[in-house]
Length: 112
Picture 1 (tube, rainbow, N blue to C red):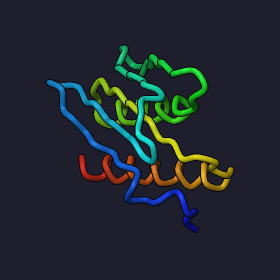
Picture 2 (cartoon, rainbow, N blue to C red):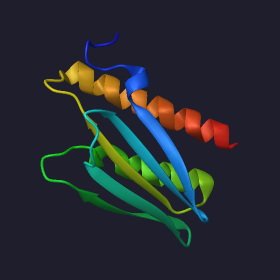
Picture 3 (cartoon, rainbow, N blue to C red):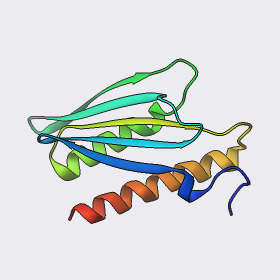
């Protein structure tokens, strides 16, 4: 079910290779920078550093996405995200999360 505000095509994931590293930019609605997370390989672990703008919630997604993509690609990955829709319901938020997860899944499948 699509809310009147959230459209799958409005949320975009773009990837930029930066040397050996990877930058993912995920935006939608009123585009902005709400949070960034950088995940990197530290021996047999993946570490992550996150910075979030106050009153933004994107960090709840950027951390897990950065860690997941770093683990799958074995590269340092920075995820920058800013998605905003006015007056979004709980269901609308869940729809945004699903769209973002689907786009990350598709990106990873294309890297195989």
